[in-house]
Image (cartoon, rainbow over all chains, first blue to last red; front, side):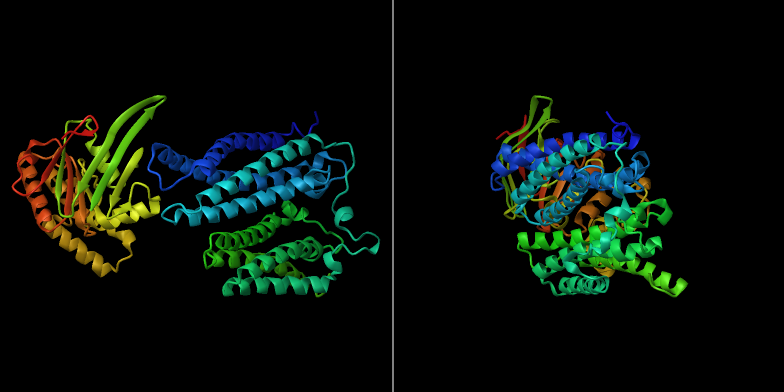
Length: 322
Length: 222
């Protein structure tokens, strides 16, 4: 057993995830019953009991979302704090890549949060129909979430049990630096082109949201999320760190940078996840409009303004660009 | 108006099932006054709660104007309750630290009506319940009969079609009970559908048209 597994943060994290899983299993069993036996037109005892149990699933899922959201932040905080135990790691970047499971685990956690937000929208539409029109869809989605969480739990244990603290790892500059002049940006983009696309996609997202072109809205949201990640790591981040060679998505989560990374990444992920879930669920439930446009606009605008403001402040203070 | 079909309600304690209501069938016409009569534990209050959408059955259905209130999601059941049903409870359930006027205003707060309309409705129901003269008094300073009249005003303020009363005279003396029955008579004449759960013998010989539905051991005993 390694010292990582017995660090306080990891014990708390894994214990919370495991306890949550027990609760989820109850909801999973009920969801299967709903998929098989749900018949709203029936006034039988079984159906009434199923309706009561459906409330239980909703309550558990709402609880799950809150805890998962907190645990995601805690996970990021944990891996960041573990960097002192691993040779060569200076921040979460080094810890995440300490073995082959870390990156997938982090991605999986983000996908689960996104799926839970989608479930929320579906649930909201469902409870606004007189006959729980989307109950089976909602339960199927919950089953998919449950299966994802089993996989996530497996990755959790695999990840934390397979970190070798004596094996030096690569960290920010190696992982995200431009090695031998290679371009790390996608589609062969240059920084000016990346920034142009970043701002264009932001406006396109807002525009499609306002005009209610839902498929275009989903696509522009996804593209914005993808390019925004690169824009933050390879451009905006350098202004946060005030160092042109420092390219890292994790260091900005540290106290040295006033934990600004939590707000930057939080607003990006929540803004795009809420936007995509909102649009997807409105297509799935054949509703004609997107629900929470103000929330999405606020989140994405916060993200864009916060990222950009570091560049502007740097320029006004120093009179040069990095 | 109200149709109860094959309604059953059970409570479970560990593995033991307690049957509170067994296969109840009841049809209440618009404007009818129904007295659910029975001893304590006969299931009157449970039936009333299910009719009012406060509780859900274990089996069967309750339709109010063809809407299955016993099956609807909370958001819809609440709307029906707020619009169509006024409730009067044995213990009045007033906000003791609010005035009579404020107590009666409370049900209309979520309605989104303009304030003038709310005040007009509150004044009207206070007058119908004959408690207008005590409107600025705090509820805790009212007598039992006055509290009951305040509860009636509150039940009437949204102008519901159905008035549901659970043991309304259990905490009243005989004089106030008779006054309550007089108010019920007025509501009946106004065309309201009234459902009263009681074991008070005063309701046995009412001087207006009513139907007594006897209940015993969770069943309608006819």
